[in-house]
Image (cartoon, rainbow, N blue to C red; front, side, top):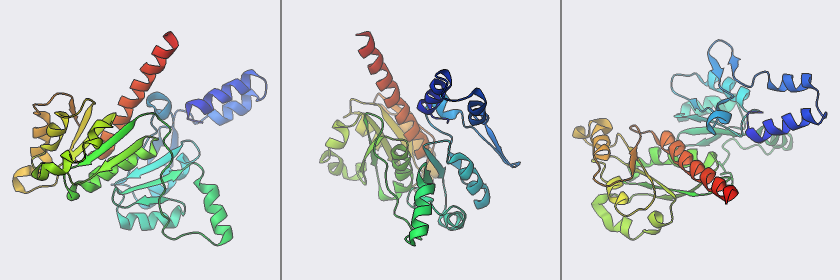
Length: 284
């Protein structure tokens, strides 16, 4: 009931006399936030305010805490997502939440809103998989986010961005290992730049790739520095400073290794563009 369309349907049902105010109140009593024992307060209202639901930050939480939070969130949001989940934590989490999906490279665990019923069906049929293959939902928002990574070592951060954007309902294309040390690899794949509505560019070492891409692109660039590199890269500080000092215009920079934040920013750019387009259509 924290999705805008569901909330509107509830209010229309009350207005039409199809639902009593008491039942509506019972549905909405945890609309703003809901307490989970003494360790969490789930912000159910965030999707209405910002367009994206609250996401669980994995490090520092026990598997039991993550599982309890997921169970509270699963019926109130289209997707429940936990980031930075290591394989051993996933194994423990899987025992508590059997229908959880794991995106290993991205280190993301996720539940879809209809997974609980599917999990019960699989268990009844004896077909439940111990290691389910994650599947991607169909895009629900117009626009395309293309994600480029400089090197293979940057993939965990790039995949975090890709999976986050996909789970949030955006179309994503990937182009990996196209760093500036072999610039011909990027130039031979100009489609990834030309066809994008927003670009996320992930790079470690010296972090030059976003500047190169921005010189070829006519769309916003979200640059993500990674902690990949030798000693003088200072765990991502060097690429961060390079991206902040880019000579190419149109580059916005998120924090080191923050693929999740890059995906949310790219999604907000697309949602704003779509909202402006819809407004112009109505006014026109």
